[in-house]
Image 1 (cartoon, rainbow, N blue to C red):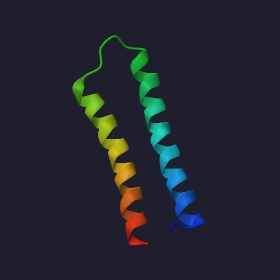
Image 2: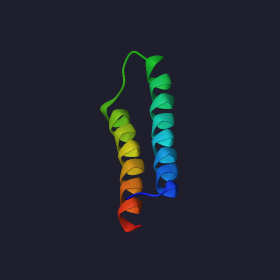
Image 3: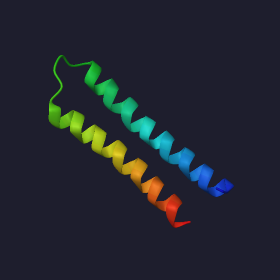
Image 4: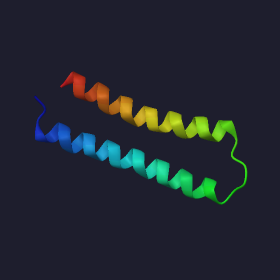
Length: 60
């Protein structure tokens, strides 16, 4: 069973991941081409945020 602190932390991580995505999408929409490196960087950033949340949840 998760406690309120875990839910708040998970919500914060999800909000941070969404902010990373929104920022990157805003930058990418203004360009005609997006490199695969930039897309990979975005996906790695999101993955890092989500795995950090998952590992901290399993440790609790």
